Amino acid sequence: MPGLKKKPSTSELLDWIKLLVNEDIDPETLKQRDASKLIPLLHGALLKNEQDVHLFERLAFIARRQGR
Image (cartoon, rainbow, N blue to C red):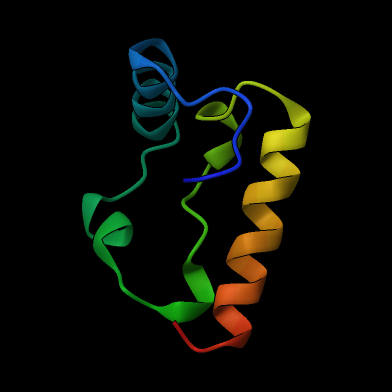
């Protein structure tokens, strides 16, 4: 995703997966292509700083409004 100050690394990916497992998130839930759910569950664990979280959420909101 362009514009991120720091891209997620393997460490963030592993942290995200651990959170998904701990929260007992169904894998089918993650596969949904629903435009209203463009932001992955627990997405904050993938991003290294607050600015990136806000940027990601804004871009997802814009994409949702455009129907992507």
